[in-house]
Image (cartoon, rainbow, N blue to C red; front, side, top):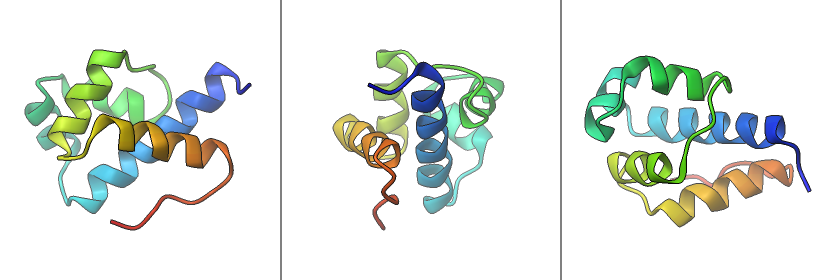
Length: 85
């Protein structure tokens, strides 16, 4: 099983990558997900763990299913690269 820091870092990579692929800023993502921009930044720097409702809010804001976000995190934890979108 992976440690909390590893999961946090994997989520950070996935969140940042998905956001950039959609061409939106942290502020735009925060607005769409109804979160504070600083919270987005903390998650992207692996300083903050998201709760399950936050994962769903982010996925919706990124126009992707939450299970796909989790799958991408698992891929990063397994040492695989993110899938192209």
